[in-house]
Length: 377
Ligand code: G3I
Image: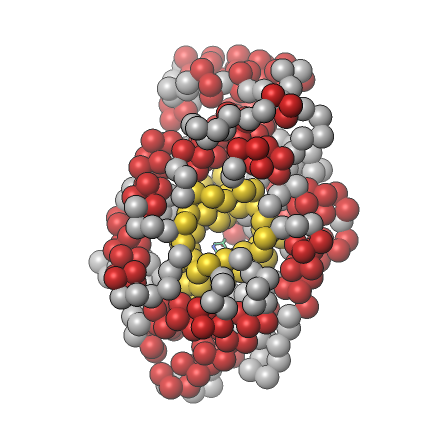
């Protein structure tokens, strides 16, 4: 009920602003995008239950230390099907020195998932970020032989460590360039090992855990654009060469625009046509400047559109939010003036964006509606 009252207030302001043309890119808002039309889930029904009913999995990027110390955080994280380490399974954390391995934070996460019947995404094996200094700035330049040996040891050790416990690995992260003429990003890996490092890493990961689904993961490929074309070309090439790639992760960090649902669907469909499973892997919708009522509506509509787009494409099985609450998000630390991109506020209360996701879930997939028992009028 309160949701309706709150939304009615929002929508009044919203329409007013729309009338003066101050909120152009949210127009045209469909009647179903009016928060006043969204239905609240029944008491006690969370995203996990709504996701179960509609056949779409919800996940969270998690910080193991926060899981240990914050009961409210634990409770929110438990309301999901999938968890992923925001940082705890990055190279920097796992192998801070050539002869030092640190698995405890990752182990904590895997234990939490087992205790709560959740799946784990592994993030990430090969990336230009999150690397330890010894790897990034070696005393002597890496030779291909030496770097290949380091890569092989790392992938075999890490994937082997959690063999059977990680459902899907982001094997290679952000290897494609969006802006430059050269379609692949220049990184330590590419410069030293050549373009073949991508296929090599997938093969190593597959050998270490043949049961894990192996994903390529990247950002700003949610809408059809040049970078998405390049990712498609890369994936086609890998698949044609028989490389074990099973899925594509579309990060969905939305900092600049309100996504167009039809464009999202068209883009997801073209990747699904490759036979890949699709996960939205790092969802957040950052707010610039002041957090106004209009911005919160816009954010909630963006979250709702992302959820609806995923629901409309059967290959899109999983939506992972890049953090639980605004207070712990990476966004304000990295982008001055941008903030509050998640589903819970810093007091761990549900935001309008939470209700946007819930409403899309309760609408269901086109062929699968939710039982009335999980809904509240
Ligand atoms: O853990 C140390 C802590 O001990 C130290 O006191 C503190 C001082 O700055 O740094 C802490 O590490 C930071 C870590 O986040 C945990 O807060 C790192 O400096 C910082 O670089 C790291 O940032 C992460 C970033 O990836 C780089 O790895 C963000 O939290 C994380 O949200 C972000 O996630 C990436 C995905 O992996 C890939 N896609 C893009 C996404 C956003 O950049």
